[in-house]
Image (tube, rainbow, N blue to C red):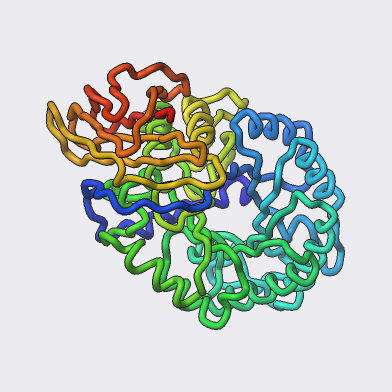
Length: 445
């Protein structure tokens, strides 16, 4: 049960006092690292032939970094008894496909659990931090033989009672002990703070002082428009209902409490709930989400949730939406968004990217604009990628680029491209937008 849904259902914590999405205001350009991962959880003993079928989808998608759980309850089922055989075979299979691994380590075994009023056992803090430290040390030492294991994340969504039935103080002890164990046993592997369900400054300020050196990367999860109220959307999600919060408050205060860290959105996704949200809705969401989050300052990684839908089972944690987040169905039949994300990754997964919104100037030449957004990215090879959408209006635009180009290709949601002829080298003209529907263009240098 915990394997198929340890992700994001409490994102609605950010939904109070949210504001309508503002018209995007272009700012100065900046260049930053960018990378991507894909998520899928596997329990110990999972049929590796099924895992291999997923890995083939990873390769087709163009994303070769995996994130998922290594369960303490799986790999130390009783005190001092470690069972890493399946995990070694899993890591070897991943390496044969060129797939790198970024596990989060979580799920306390019953024998080690503290217990509490909301206890589900697996979400408990350990009763003895020494037991956790010993497990983290043995796991990191065992996985050291696999160079495709890049990092260890310490628990998951710990700022939500659903996934961590403990206090910030208890999490601080687990983070500190796990980090020391991993770094001692595995050397250069990165340590990640457990991904938070939203940009939670209160949690960071309770955990971080004195412990910022315990981790290298600060992850956040983002499921706007699946588990948030209607007025919390992709475009305002990081601001937690307060305009400018992420840039002007969260980043500087998180830096002050924890030290400056790379910010990762290592889980984002959108559910195709039958009768409510379609494959097309999901595909269009991914365009808006990629444009918005890749353009956000300091966000250096996007974790795509998830490669396929889980089987239908009773007791799904987090509600029925968790069944429908996949880019493919459970039988691996591709949804429209698989092709959308594949194209977006091919355009944006360039190692570094320059966010240059201020170098694109959209002018409304017809129709009516409501909430107009644009993002412009410049790749290291000089190609420009332009995202355009209007949340509520249907304007026709002329978009002038500061950097000239030779030709423009527009990409549909199914990933296919076609020439956009109304381009004179600096300006795209006659770009018609429908409410909420995003368009993506690539400009060749």
